[in-house]
Image: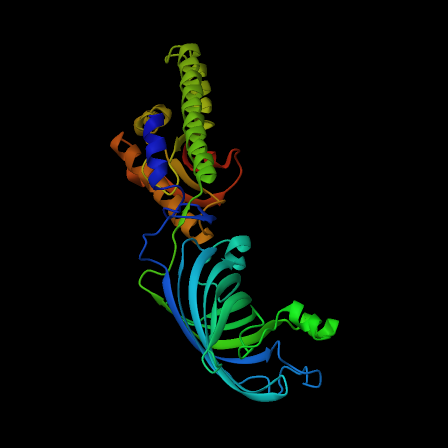
Length: 392
Protein backbone atom coordinates (compact mmCIF):
# COMPACT_ATOMS: atom_id res chain seq x y z
CA UNK A 1 0.00 0.00 0.00
CA UNK A 2 2.87 2.38 0.82
CA UNK A 3 4.57 1.63 -2.52
CA UNK A 4 1.31 2.36 -4.34
CA UNK A 5 1.04 5.76 -2.65
CA UNK A 6 4.66 6.63 -3.53
CA UNK A 7 4.14 5.64 -7.18
CA UNK A 8 0.94 7.64 -7.37
CA UNK A 9 2.55 10.72 -5.84
CA UNK A 10 5.26 10.76 -8.52
CA UNK A 11 2.63 11.41 -11.20
CA UNK A 12 0.23 13.67 -9.29
CA UNK A 13 2.07 15.51 -6.57
CA UNK A 14 -0.55 18.12 -5.66
CA UNK A 15 -4.02 19.23 -6.57
CA UNK A 16 -4.20 19.86 -10.31
CA UNK A 17 -1.26 17.41 -10.99
CA UNK A 18 1.22 20.10 -9.95
CA UNK A 19 4.90 19.11 -10.07
CA UNK A 20 7.32 21.50 -8.32
CA UNK A 21 10.14 22.75 -10.55
CA UNK A 22 13.62 24.06 -9.77
CA UNK A 23 14.26 27.26 -11.75
CA UNK A 24 18.04 26.89 -11.34
CA UNK A 25 18.18 23.43 -12.99
CA UNK A 26 16.94 22.70 -16.51
CA UNK A 27 16.64 19.61 -18.69
CA UNK A 28 19.43 19.47 -21.27
CA UNK A 29 18.34 20.27 -24.84
CA UNK A 30 19.78 18.68 -27.98
CA UNK A 31 22.58 20.31 -29.98
CA UNK A 32 20.27 21.97 -32.52
CA UNK A 33 18.16 23.76 -29.89
CA UNK A 34 18.66 27.31 -28.58
CA UNK A 35 20.46 28.74 -31.62
CA UNK A 36 19.86 32.35 -32.62
CA UNK A 37 20.90 34.95 -35.18
CA UNK A 38 21.30 38.71 -34.69
CA UNK A 39 21.54 41.73 -36.95
CA UNK A 40 21.78 45.43 -36.20
CA UNK A 41 23.39 48.79 -36.85
CA UNK A 42 26.04 50.30 -34.63
CA UNK A 43 27.50 53.69 -33.85
CA UNK A 44 31.18 53.84 -32.96
CA UNK A 45 33.79 56.11 -31.53
CA UNK A 46 37.41 55.29 -32.39
CA UNK A 47 40.57 56.39 -30.56
CA UNK A 48 43.62 55.44 -32.60
CA UNK A 49 47.30 55.07 -31.83
CA UNK A 50 47.99 57.74 -34.51
CA UNK A 51 46.10 60.66 -32.99
CA UNK A 52 47.70 63.98 -32.28
CA UNK A 53 47.00 65.71 -28.98
CA UNK A 54 44.49 68.27 -30.27
CA UNK A 55 41.87 65.73 -31.45
CA UNK A 56 38.70 66.00 -29.35
CA UNK A 57 38.03 63.31 -26.75
CA UNK A 58 34.28 63.67 -27.34
CA UNK A 59 32.95 60.24 -28.47
CA UNK A 60 30.23 61.99 -30.51
CA UNK A 61 32.76 63.95 -32.53
CA UNK A 62 32.08 63.50 -36.28
CA UNK A 63 35.76 62.71 -36.84
CA UNK A 64 35.67 59.76 -34.49
CA UNK A 65 33.49 57.31 -36.43
CA UNK A 66 30.34 56.56 -38.37
CA UNK A 67 27.59 53.98 -38.76
CA UNK A 68 28.48 50.30 -38.99
CA UNK A 69 26.69 46.96 -38.97
CA UNK A 70 26.66 43.78 -36.86
CA UNK A 71 25.65 40.22 -37.72
CA UNK A 72 26.04 37.30 -35.33
CA UNK A 73 25.09 33.68 -34.76
CA UNK A 74 25.13 32.06 -31.35
CA UNK A 75 23.95 29.20 -29.17
CA UNK A 76 23.00 28.92 -25.50
CA UNK A 77 24.26 25.68 -23.98
CA UNK A 78 22.44 26.47 -20.74
CA UNK A 79 20.13 29.40 -19.87
CA UNK A 80 23.18 31.17 -18.43
CA UNK A 81 26.16 30.25 -20.67
CA UNK A 82 26.62 30.36 -24.44
CA UNK A 83 28.90 31.19 -27.36
CA UNK A 84 28.48 33.77 -30.11
CA UNK A 85 30.36 34.50 -33.34
CA UNK A 86 29.97 38.15 -34.36
CA UNK A 87 31.09 40.11 -37.42
CA UNK A 88 30.93 43.89 -37.30
CA UNK A 89 31.91 46.27 -40.06
CA UNK A 90 32.88 49.87 -39.39
CA UNK A 91 33.37 52.90 -41.61
CA UNK A 92 35.63 55.38 -39.81
CA UNK A 93 35.90 58.74 -41.51
CA UNK A 94 38.29 61.67 -41.13
CA UNK A 95 40.35 59.98 -38.41
CA UNK A 96 43.47 62.00 -37.63
CA UNK A 97 46.72 60.17 -38.01
CA UNK A 98 50.25 61.45 -37.72
CA UNK A 99 50.07 64.72 -39.64
CA UNK A 100 47.07 63.72 -41.75
CA UNK A 101 43.58 62.25 -41.75
CA UNK A 102 41.59 59.95 -43.98
CA UNK A 103 38.76 57.37 -43.93
CA UNK A 104 39.15 53.69 -43.08
CA UNK A 105 36.96 50.64 -43.60
CA UNK A 106 37.52 47.50 -41.56
CA UNK A 107 35.89 44.32 -40.24
CA UNK A 108 36.16 42.72 -36.82
CA UNK A 109 35.40 39.00 -36.44
CA UNK A 110 35.14 37.91 -32.83
CA UNK A 111 34.15 34.90 -30.70
CA UNK A 112 32.34 35.79 -27.45
CA UNK A 113 31.61 33.77 -24.33
CA UNK A 114 28.13 34.83 -23.17
CA UNK A 115 27.03 34.92 -19.52
CA UNK A 116 23.31 35.64 -18.95
CA UNK A 117 23.44 37.21 -15.48
CA UNK A 118 19.64 37.33 -15.15
CA UNK A 119 19.30 33.56 -15.53
CA UNK A 120 22.46 32.73 -13.56
CA UNK A 121 21.41 34.72 -10.49
CA UNK A 122 17.61 34.91 -10.86
CA UNK A 123 16.84 31.47 -12.26
CA UNK A 124 15.34 30.66 -15.67
CA UNK A 125 11.97 32.17 -16.54
CA UNK A 126 10.65 31.59 -20.05
CA UNK A 127 8.64 34.82 -20.42
CA UNK A 128 11.02 37.20 -18.63
CA UNK A 129 10.86 40.52 -20.50
CA UNK A 130 14.43 41.73 -19.86
CA UNK A 131 17.72 39.86 -19.68
CA UNK A 132 21.20 41.27 -19.25
CA UNK A 133 24.36 39.44 -20.31
CA UNK A 134 28.07 40.19 -20.25
CA UNK A 135 30.69 38.74 -22.54
CA UNK A 136 34.46 38.72 -23.10
CA UNK A 137 35.65 37.90 -26.58
CA UNK A 138 38.68 37.56 -28.80
CA UNK A 139 38.89 38.07 -32.56
CA UNK A 140 40.70 39.58 -35.50
CA UNK A 141 40.28 43.12 -36.84
CA UNK A 142 41.33 43.94 -40.41
CA UNK A 143 41.73 47.39 -42.03
CA UNK A 144 41.04 47.35 -45.79
CA UNK A 145 42.20 50.93 -46.50
CA UNK A 146 45.77 50.76 -45.19
CA UNK A 147 48.71 50.40 -47.52
CA UNK A 148 49.78 47.74 -46.90
CA UNK A 149 46.56 46.38 -45.44
CA UNK A 150 46.86 45.84 -41.70
CA UNK A 151 45.17 43.90 -38.96
CA UNK A 152 45.71 42.44 -35.54
CA UNK A 153 44.16 40.43 -32.72
CA UNK A 154 41.19 42.20 -31.11
CA UNK A 155 40.07 41.94 -27.50
CA UNK A 156 36.42 42.62 -26.80
CA UNK A 157 34.31 43.19 -23.69
CA UNK A 158 30.62 44.11 -23.66
CA UNK A 159 27.19 44.16 -22.09
CA UNK A 160 24.03 43.22 -24.01
CA UNK A 161 20.46 43.95 -22.92
CA UNK A 162 17.74 41.79 -24.50
CA UNK A 163 14.02 42.64 -24.50
CA UNK A 164 11.45 39.94 -25.31
CA UNK A 165 8.90 40.73 -28.04
CA UNK A 166 7.58 37.21 -28.70
CA UNK A 167 8.70 33.62 -28.32
CA UNK A 168 11.18 33.83 -31.23
CA UNK A 169 11.81 37.59 -31.47
CA UNK A 170 13.84 39.95 -29.27
CA UNK A 171 15.36 43.38 -29.64
CA UNK A 172 18.74 44.10 -28.12
CA UNK A 173 21.10 46.91 -27.12
CA UNK A 174 24.74 45.84 -27.22
CA UNK A 175 27.43 48.17 -25.78
CA UNK A 176 31.03 46.99 -26.04
CA UNK A 177 34.64 48.01 -26.40
CA UNK A 178 37.29 46.65 -28.77
CA UNK A 179 41.03 46.93 -28.17
CA UNK A 180 43.81 46.14 -30.64
CA UNK A 181 47.51 46.79 -30.71
CA UNK A 182 48.37 50.02 -32.50
CA UNK A 183 48.96 48.54 -35.94
CA UNK A 184 45.39 48.77 -37.27
CA UNK A 185 45.80 52.41 -38.31
CA UNK A 186 49.62 52.38 -38.54
CA UNK A 187 49.75 52.58 -42.36
CA UNK A 188 52.96 50.55 -42.30
CA UNK A 189 54.69 52.59 -39.60
CA UNK A 190 56.33 51.24 -36.45
CA UNK A 191 54.03 52.34 -33.60
CA UNK A 192 55.47 50.16 -30.85
CA UNK A 193 55.96 51.76 -27.43
CA UNK A 194 59.74 51.47 -27.94
CA UNK A 195 59.55 53.47 -31.19
CA UNK A 196 57.41 56.18 -29.54
CA UNK A 197 60.04 56.61 -26.82
CA UNK A 198 62.93 56.48 -29.28
CA UNK A 199 61.48 59.47 -31.11
CA UNK A 200 60.90 61.45 -27.95
CA UNK A 201 57.24 60.46 -27.48
CA UNK A 202 55.59 61.49 -24.25
CA UNK A 203 54.02 59.16 -21.66
CA UNK A 204 50.64 60.21 -23.05
CA UNK A 205 51.67 59.07 -26.49
CA UNK A 206 52.96 55.84 -24.99
CA UNK A 207 49.48 55.09 -23.61
CA UNK A 208 48.01 55.60 -27.08
CA UNK A 209 49.88 52.60 -28.39
CA UNK A 210 46.53 50.67 -28.41
CA UNK A 211 43.71 51.36 -30.87
CA UNK A 212 40.43 51.57 -28.97
CA UNK A 213 36.84 51.32 -30.23
CA UNK A 214 33.66 52.11 -28.30
CA UNK A 215 30.50 50.71 -29.94
CA UNK A 216 26.75 50.58 -29.37
CA UNK A 217 24.45 48.38 -31.47
CA UNK A 218 20.66 48.25 -31.69
CA UNK A 219 19.20 45.27 -33.49
CA UNK A 220 16.91 42.24 -33.50
CA UNK A 221 17.43 38.61 -32.47
CA UNK A 222 15.60 35.66 -34.01
CA UNK A 223 15.60 32.41 -32.03
CA UNK A 224 15.82 29.35 -34.26
CA UNK A 225 13.76 26.22 -33.60
CA UNK A 226 13.35 25.21 -29.96
CA UNK A 227 14.34 28.25 -27.92
CA UNK A 228 13.03 27.46 -24.43
CA UNK A 229 14.14 25.27 -21.54
CA UNK A 230 12.21 22.90 -19.29
CA UNK A 231 12.97 23.35 -15.61
CA UNK A 232 13.84 20.06 -13.93
CA UNK A 233 11.62 18.67 -11.15
CA UNK A 234 12.57 19.86 -7.67
CA UNK A 235 13.76 16.56 -6.16
CA UNK A 236 13.75 17.84 -2.58
CA UNK A 237 10.18 19.09 -2.91
CA UNK A 238 9.09 15.82 -4.51
CA UNK A 239 10.60 13.80 -1.68
CA UNK A 240 8.90 16.02 0.88
CA UNK A 241 5.54 15.60 -0.85
CA UNK A 242 6.05 11.81 -1.08
CA UNK A 243 6.74 11.73 2.64
CA UNK A 244 3.59 13.76 3.21
CA UNK A 245 1.56 11.12 1.35
CA UNK A 246 3.12 8.34 3.42
CA UNK A 247 2.49 10.25 6.63
CA UNK A 248 -1.14 10.75 5.61
CA UNK A 249 -1.55 7.03 4.94
CA UNK A 250 0.05 6.13 8.26
CA UNK A 251 -2.25 8.57 10.00
CA UNK A 252 -5.28 7.06 8.26
CA UNK A 253 -4.22 3.55 9.26
CA UNK A 254 -3.67 4.59 12.87
CA UNK A 255 -7.02 6.35 12.97
CA UNK A 256 -8.66 3.23 11.58
CA UNK A 257 -6.96 1.02 14.18
CA UNK A 258 -7.98 3.34 16.99
CA UNK A 259 -11.59 3.38 15.76
CA UNK A 260 -11.68 -0.42 15.47
CA UNK A 261 -10.25 -0.83 18.96
CA UNK A 262 -12.77 1.63 20.37
CA UNK A 263 -15.69 -0.11 18.66
CA UNK A 264 -14.49 -3.52 19.85
CA UNK A 265 -14.30 -2.21 23.41
CA UNK A 266 -17.74 -0.66 23.04
CA UNK A 267 -19.27 -3.93 21.84
CA UNK A 268 -17.42 -6.02 24.41
CA UNK A 269 -18.54 -3.86 27.31
CA UNK A 270 -22.17 -3.36 26.39
CA UNK A 271 -24.81 -5.28 28.40
CA UNK A 272 -27.44 -7.59 26.91
CA UNK A 273 -29.95 -5.92 24.65
CA UNK A 274 -32.94 -6.82 26.82
CA UNK A 275 -31.74 -4.51 29.54
CA UNK A 276 -32.87 -0.95 28.78
CA UNK A 277 -30.00 0.94 30.36
CA UNK A 278 -27.21 -0.61 28.23
CA UNK A 279 -29.27 0.09 25.09
CA UNK A 280 -29.57 3.71 26.04
CA UNK A 281 -25.88 3.83 26.84
CA UNK A 282 -24.97 2.26 23.45
CA UNK A 283 -27.19 4.71 21.61
CA UNK A 284 -25.51 7.57 23.40
CA UNK A 285 -22.09 6.22 22.48
CA UNK A 286 -23.02 5.82 18.83
CA UNK A 287 -24.68 9.23 18.76
CA UNK A 288 -21.44 10.87 19.84
CA UNK A 289 -19.27 8.80 17.48
CA UNK A 290 -17.70 10.44 14.42
CA UNK A 291 -16.03 8.01 12.02
CA UNK A 292 -13.49 9.24 9.44
CA UNK A 293 -12.79 8.16 5.88
CA UNK A 294 -9.59 9.53 4.28
CA UNK A 295 -8.79 10.60 0.70
CA UNK A 296 -5.66 11.20 -1.34
CA UNK A 297 -4.77 14.73 -2.40
CA UNK A 298 -7.03 16.12 -5.15
CA UNK A 299 -9.12 12.90 -5.17
CA UNK A 300 -12.73 12.13 -4.31
CA UNK A 301 -12.22 8.34 -4.39
CA UNK A 302 -11.67 6.69 -1.00
CA UNK A 303 -7.95 6.08 -0.45
CA UNK A 304 -8.44 2.71 1.24
CA UNK A 305 -11.58 0.57 1.37
CA UNK A 306 -10.49 -0.46 4.84
CA UNK A 307 -11.58 2.98 6.04
CA UNK A 308 -15.20 1.89 5.54
CA UNK A 309 -14.82 -0.39 8.57
CA UNK A 310 -14.96 2.84 10.56
CA UNK A 311 -18.53 3.58 9.48
CA UNK A 312 -20.11 0.11 9.29
CA UNK A 313 -21.36 0.07 12.89
CA UNK A 314 -22.92 3.51 12.51
CA UNK A 315 -24.48 2.53 9.17
CA UNK A 316 -25.95 -0.65 10.66
CA UNK A 317 -27.46 1.27 13.56
CA UNK A 318 -28.91 3.91 11.21
CA UNK A 319 -30.36 1.26 8.86
CA UNK A 320 -31.94 -0.70 11.74
CA UNK A 321 -33.42 2.35 13.45
CA UNK A 322 -34.15 4.55 10.41
CA UNK A 323 -31.82 7.18 11.93
CA UNK A 324 -30.54 10.22 10.12
CA UNK A 325 -26.81 10.58 9.41
CA UNK A 326 -24.68 13.64 8.66
CA UNK A 327 -21.78 13.17 6.23
CA UNK A 328 -19.33 16.10 6.20
CA UNK A 329 -16.62 16.40 3.54
CA UNK A 330 -13.35 18.33 3.98
CA UNK A 331 -10.30 19.38 1.91
CA UNK A 332 -6.99 20.79 3.13
CA UNK A 333 -6.85 24.56 2.72
CA UNK A 334 -3.14 24.67 1.90
CA UNK A 335 -3.65 23.34 -1.63
CA UNK A 336 -6.19 24.49 -4.19
CA UNK A 337 -8.47 27.54 -4.26
CA UNK A 338 -11.38 27.99 -1.86
CA UNK A 339 -13.88 27.44 -4.69
CA UNK A 340 -12.15 24.24 -5.81
CA UNK A 341 -11.88 22.89 -2.25
CA UNK A 342 -15.60 23.53 -1.68
CA UNK A 343 -16.48 21.35 -4.68
CA UNK A 344 -13.90 18.73 -3.70
CA UNK A 345 -15.24 18.45 -0.13
CA UNK A 346 -18.79 18.05 -1.47
CA UNK A 347 -17.67 15.28 -3.85
CA UNK A 348 -15.94 13.45 -1.00
CA UNK A 349 -19.07 13.66 1.17
CA UNK A 350 -21.23 12.30 -1.66
CA UNK A 351 -18.80 9.40 -2.20
CA UNK A 352 -19.17 8.32 1.43
CA UNK A 353 -22.95 8.84 1.28
CA UNK A 354 -23.11 6.44 -1.68
CA UNK A 355 -21.22 3.84 0.34
CA UNK A 356 -23.68 4.23 3.24
CA UNK A 357 -26.58 3.59 0.86
CA UNK A 358 -24.86 0.35 -0.20
CA UNK A 359 -24.75 -0.59 3.51
CA UNK A 360 -28.51 -0.26 3.76
CA UNK A 361 -29.01 3.35 4.88
CA UNK A 362 -31.92 5.19 3.26
CA UNK A 363 -30.55 8.00 1.10
CA UNK A 364 -33.25 10.37 2.34
CA UNK A 365 -31.83 9.91 5.86
CA UNK A 366 -28.36 11.16 4.82
CA UNK A 367 -27.51 14.86 5.02
CA UNK A 368 -24.44 15.88 2.98
CA UNK A 369 -22.37 18.87 4.20
CA UNK A 370 -19.42 20.40 2.30
CA UNK A 371 -17.06 22.13 4.74
CA UNK A 372 -14.54 23.24 2.07
CA UNK A 373 -10.85 23.67 2.83
CA UNK A 374 -9.81 23.53 6.50
CA UNK A 375 -6.59 23.33 8.49
CA UNK A 376 -7.93 22.16 11.86
CA UNK A 377 -5.81 18.96 11.94
CA UNK A 378 -2.04 18.55 11.89
CA UNK A 379 -0.35 17.49 9.69
CA UNK A 380 -2.60 19.20 7.20
CA UNK A 381 -2.94 16.03 5.08
CA UNK A 382 -5.31 14.72 7.83
CA UNK A 383 -7.85 17.29 6.69
CA UNK A 384 -8.51 15.37 3.44
CA UNK A 385 -11.39 13.31 4.81
CA UNK A 386 -15.11 12.87 5.30
CA UNK A 387 -16.78 12.18 8.66
CA UNK A 388 -19.98 10.25 9.44
CA UNK A 389 -22.08 10.71 12.57
CA UNK A 390 -25.67 10.27 13.75
CA UNK A 391 -27.64 13.49 13.42
CA UNK A 392 -28.53 15.13 16.72
